[in-house]
Amino acid sequence: MPGLLRDYFVVLPDSVAGHAVAGQLPAPEATGAAREAGGDVLTVAHPSGRPWVVARPLVRKVSHLRRGDDALVLIGPDRVPEAVLASLLEGVHDRADLERRLARLPGLHHVVARLSGETWIRGTASGLRRIYHARHAEAGTIASDRPAVLARLTGAPLDDGALALRLLDFLPHPLSRRVLWRGVRETGAGYGLALPVAAPGTAAAPGPREYRWWEPPTPELSLAEGARRLGDAVADSVRAHVGGLDRISCELSGGLDSTTLTFAARATAPGALSLLTVAARDRYSEDETWARRAVEAARQNSDAPAPAHHIIPADQAPYFYADLAATSAELNDEPLPVAPGRARAHLLLSRAHATGSRYHLTGYGGDELFLGLPHAYQNLFHGNPLTAWNHLSGLRHQLGWPLLPTLKALLNRSTFPRWLAGAVTTEPQPVTRTPLLSWGVRQSLRPWFTDHANALITEEFRAAAAEQAEPIDRWRGRHVDIDAVRMGARHFQAMEDIGMTIGLPVAAPFYDDRVLEATLAVRLEERISPWRYKPLLVEAMRGVVPDALLARTTKDHMSSDEHQGLREHASELADLWTGSRLAEHGLVDARHLLRLAAEPFSPVLVEHSISSTVAGETWLRTAENAWPTSQSTPTISEA
Image (cartoon, rainbow, N blue to C red):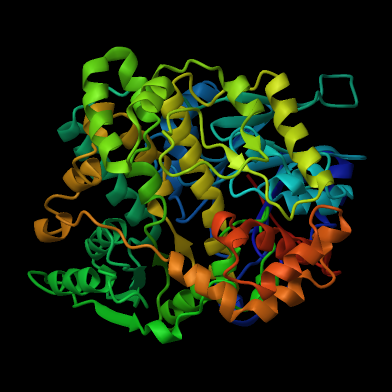
């Protein structure tokens, strides 16, 4: 059965109708190796005994505690001890008080709480954990971490405008919140959803309301102080995922991010640590060399068992666009541009699972957090123009930005809504020497999009601008930094879902809220530099990662594998565009795409990436065939 929703939870109102909804939840059977992870349905009850939180946590853990009518539910990678839950809940005064207490924990959990009769739900500030809600005809507002569940329960149809947006390479805030089903809404990262109870003597509860629970920290820490805080946050996050497990694995690409997590994982003293490296086809690649150095260093000066190193030969690694039909194994919340690389990810996770690993760590999120984007120098320019220009001059020479356009971009004061209105264009992609100092990156509409798709996309951007969309932060550099992290966190969902298919939990500790906060709290001019590679992460890992490994300043890319994949899998791409579902929705020109499948090295494909269109097509086919007929019988647990 394609598109199995293996992992989700739903928050229901305290009513007869809400109880009835609990019996309508999709409960497909886990298949293959995924069955090993369990997946029993757990229900936490309202004081009335009716279902409140119904969860099917295939790999995550549900921790819950009730004190009187107040209750707390945490859904995350680790089970939170009852004593810790009690310290969070007992004597809590209000929502803000509880949030201050929750800041003691790694920022990895969905939180569902009931205080003074009001239910409130939130995900994470990083966007790794999200919340959606919809109105059910009988039950009223219901919430979930999976929009497809709400679409199923409410009968919501697909939204072509949201689908057209997903054909772009990435969606900037706030358009990233546009859900693929009509009537289903996403609560913004950093915001929570409050579900008030009905007033005495009334039948219906007021509608839901959003509240802000997270603000970015002030960037005031020195590099040294910030590095100490970041090192602690990374260690805590790794420990929350794999602490106490006997067999774990890490993807060790050879880059700084994966190397960091390898040594952080080793510090948890697992009984067995397996490190997996995919060899590169490019003979100039340095990743495998650095991965071997990391393994050698990890085997020295340690009382822990030596890690096992598994190198997957390059000729065994699938090219991009391999086995596109396999993407139907997971129904992601939305089309994700990483979908064309699913076969490669599946191979690596399968090899990790074969080692007996009980949890797999990846370095996803490291680039978005620690590289720093040029837009940040807009912020620095306001308070310290000489330092900003000094840093920007170094970056300008590295990237080949012309002087006058750089000055013009630096002095530009356009508002966020104005930028958003012009963030898509029919013009060719900007050249690489265009200074990037605005609220984001301008994107080009693809030549295979139909006029209907172009009209939908441009109207979505214009409508958001006309509504005076608020940026994530008033400083454009912080806005872009946080938006990039949240975008990456969305993309990581594809890895998590592949892991659930295999039966192996997958984690990206860098998307922990505490890691994000520690990074943003460091003064900008010390956090990023054109002359140092990821200086904050390097300093945070001194004493954990050997200095020789922290000295790497290069990064490999796999663009050749993507371009070669277009040729190797041309027939699969042609099959994809034959009977295209996107074409049936009037969004793409299937004949144009068929011609490109036959011309994989066309200049059009050099200028325009096709990965998001492939992701949209495969996702749509999965979504149309996602629903099994079986129903769940939840097990009630008081809270």
